[in-house]
Length: 434
Image (cartoon, rainbow, N blue to C red; front, side):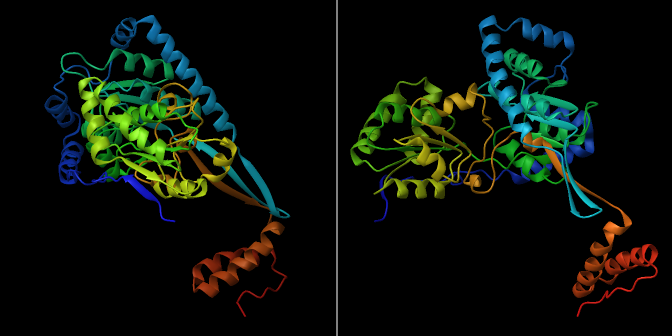
């Protein structure tokens, strides 16, 4: 049977999207041409900030001193979890080599990017966890130079807890700048910084568009849209916890989709009943975001079976996927498309967002169909090499010559021919395809 919608979204993540492309292009072009001075001009305009762009050691120390010890302990706890998980992930990437034929060896090397730019949102919310997630993984990957940048608050600067987290996690420089101008500064190597090889971290639509436009000039983690979350729940799930988890993710923004997929109509109806009260109990700004997200973007879907639930989830390919159903192992083995998976009521997306150790920079807008989230792997280049003896190259050269001529690429064929002629002058080879 077809799935049934008890609540259907009236909008998609792109319904109210503002066309920011031209604005971002113009800012990038002006900063590329005008350098440091133009970037500072935009910082004054958009950040309302005229302090140091690159924080001095004294400024960093003062910011760190102002962070309460309990907050420092919490940041250190989260950093340790992210760091240890990243170290385990890095162990899965190794240099290898294989002798494909006697005397001809192929190899793989895993080389970290040299310069990394980590964007840490700091406007409406101070995304302390984003500093932990982005800087820590770059450090574990072995990147040579790491810049953490965050929008300064007017007459205040970067939030001290972000400064503390960036410093603890290994940032080499901390930059007080936000928006397109920060992305441009890291890409073009302004203010004495090395040009970034890769830019990572979440941001608003202007930051996301700047990264999209600059992709190719610089690497990026992914092209990001509004955060989204899906919960799979069966009849044994706690409706209050399901509703709370949906609301917790809806508070990200007015256009942050949340979805419930279940095989139990009674549970679905109970969640729909509970959600408005939970939203009303949030602080005003959080509540406004969650209310709009729930009203316009949320969906509640009832399926006939757990297989249909899994297929629906894979089609949505959510950034965050929570399973509150029996038999966690079945779901772990069956589900294929998600950014990060949270198995069982005892886990929640909020844990992954803040302190558990998995990364919270994840694919949105169904891009989990083809990519995973930020990890040490994103900072690593897997490159290949080859080396051969003359005897080992013989069969490779013969095949290369024939394949090249079959393709019509005579120059390629001749680069094999000359080696055969030099190394094996007394042998005859059939170097044209039949």
